[in-house]
Length: 366
Length: 249
Image (tube, rainbow over all chains, first blue to last red; front, side, top):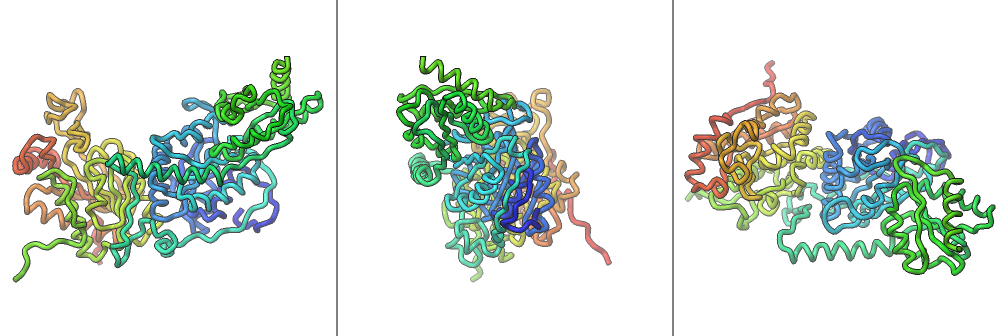
């Protein structure tokens, strides 16, 4: 796909599109480990990156991969990693270190069903892991959940810049369907890679060798043995996260000001929920939709736009009510919040969601 | 008058956090003094471990980062990809490298990563308070082997230099000791050789320092040195375990 011109419409499989978007976003370094359903990404990177001036390295494990990413990021490299649910779980140790040490990274989870080794079919049961942090300590990671391959490309491309601006990992949360399906997309232009010799100037905080002036010596670290020093550092991080909450919240809403029910769904499920809303309209039930694009920061404020007509808000997800917690925070005590779910790799049809939503609505208006 | 002792620019002038008589200070100095002599301080990136040396970056005057327990070789592999022209090293203890970090060190050596690992083997977990390490000798007492390590319960101590020397990616592996002035002079030669081979891009380089932990061994510093010589060297023989083939024309 390297030959495809920017702006040209092409048909791409999700995983290959994610990889190509990362390369074009300027993410020059990729560290990966095979895991279904995202193994096309390390395969693609192993072929494309070396001949385009980038670096591919297959790690000994996901632990290895995230720590290579930490090292490369600390050294000033622009880094992309990808994995799927159990692999992302192994990477959580590193995520915590990267956040504390303020090392940029773009990480992609092509998620599947769990818990444990679970299965290889699509899931969204890593919502807590992604939004609540699977690693230790106080930290936050911006998480974006695309609902189309094009949106995934755009978000990965943008995340490359966000990771640098915010000096923090940014996660793209795409369920396994997104990785395996094909859609027509338009690819962005190639951002130039930062060469090693430019790093000292472009990223003066990075460990890149101080040259002749040891007053410019850099240390990338997360250890703070004095409690007051550690507290001050965490407070500093959370001032940053508070700004991120204001600036990085993304949401799409449809017809929520005058709806009987409001469906809340992200990723592939949001597309199914959109169809379900159309089915419900045919049955005389007006269904609005809130589609969180950022899972953290979660678009709580969007729920203020729900009109007085609405009787119930429904979280539709491929997990056992994980996003439901955030939906409840968003709705507060104004309205009941209910759940429509499948899990374990099962995908609901639009008809199934419409039927369940109608049942919940009838109960709510009784 | 010729000075008999000078500071090296390689060490930051500050008190260290190490216990009296511990050999970390010697190892730090050998590494940084060698970098200084080779004119490489400003072109070097180091990786500190978890353990007593987690704050090595406070003392070694080079760009450095910390790493999670055992992960330093993976971190250094990432750094190396971004800066192929710099000197990169990890500094790791035996709990870090020989236990929780075995996957990372073995695969870094197998890939022939062009960095140097300095391995401090003192047969015990230091910072956490003297627990048994994979390198703890049979019969040696620790807080988790209070009657002395037994083979039945905990297996035999791991000889890391020998283990890694089976890997073709390893260009240079030497085990040295910090227990006497003669040992220390030899140790410094090994440090220099490792950096030279790294600079030539010949593969993974590894120097194991047999070291003391007077605090957790419950010995005075001189007795600890003697204990190292009497007990560690017989089980962990000094010497070169792997080196690049010398080209003859």
